[in-house]
Image 1 (cartoon, one colour):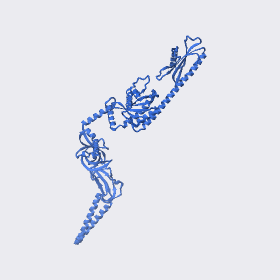
Image 2: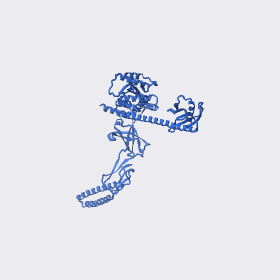
Image 3: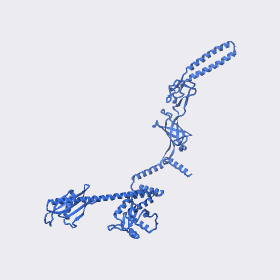
Image 4: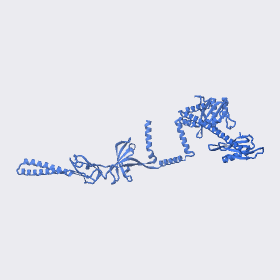
Length: 575
């Protein structure tokens, strides 16, 4: 199309970013060196370039070299260079224009080829995902393998597709398309397994008949092809994390030989499905095999190369176990503890009456003899005056009866005097008890009469509970599984929540048969006596008490609960 042109070259960027010539005209161009210089200049500069050329055989006009870059997506893709003889500048400009238009065709060709490749890759990816979905939908490994070979047979138009897995260092056929059952001693089965071994040993896809450029060994495939007659064979090894676990062997008519493109396509599908197949085969194994493999894997990681964290943890665990097996310590039994008074005194109403005053109430500390409450005694004083007056009157009557020597009347009067004296003593006793005082130094645990001033009380009604400040006992809640370890006389330490910094020593004084059920377990009540008293102690304080049982190995102390639980469960299961 370009008048006067006598040589041309087209170079294209390859996948390795190197520019290589893909077209040369004429085939034996004598000016290739000059054109190559033009191309190198355009590659370095990135823009079109015109340069005069020295041509001996140009009769008329001048020789020029014209080079033009072809860009794709903002990146230099190709360079076309042309040598021509022109007679005017207009002819040179026209040639440059035509060269630019021609370069657009190169760009369009590249885009079309790229689109075709992307479409083919998309179709392959879609097909691979569909095959993977169908494989994953199967519940067992055998069904998944059969589904894979069936889908591959349909996808590649094969007469038969076989899949095998590694077993004891050799490939063993697992499933075959278009065949639910197959005999293990068939010659074709052995030929397929041998072909799989050949592909696995070389760790590459093998195709028979091989291409002229292949360097792979296909002896087993050739032998299999001779048995089948007029067949094309391809074997694809299956990799799972760089480890070969199996292989695929595809067979179809010889008039449709397998190509490298088919090999890449099959490899891409197999790479998607192999992980799912491997997982299903792992899950279908017997539990004992899974346990053995898990132990072997962990042992190899622990002993072999790498995994320094596991090794450090293992060494630390061994050191702790050895330390606990050799060193003895004090076995202490922990139990929830509550501080209680050794005894409590109940203060009741001495007679029916009314509350006059109540200076103390629950929570106050009362000293011995201190007034804690008083009853209204006005009626009692009137009653006392009544009986005093009656006693004086009876005394005068007795004197008159004595003067009259009336013994019978005197006897009656003396009896009435005794009754009046008794009533007088009762009233005086009630007057004394109208003031309610603390029987000893202690803490008023319950009772608040300050809210009932002027209210009526009845004889025997409980008014206050008083606990001593120097007599306590500890109530320990010991679990049923540990009560056999507790003995009277054992010592321990109590830590109270209110006084965590102060330990209190105690001695076990009584193991009671009384149980308490809470939180789904039974607890025995164990009583202990404090070996020292502090003025900060109050009844009702809670904490944790630890009873020192004996000296034993630390490992026995730490593992006792677990061993006893296992022993109990085994006994329940065995019986």
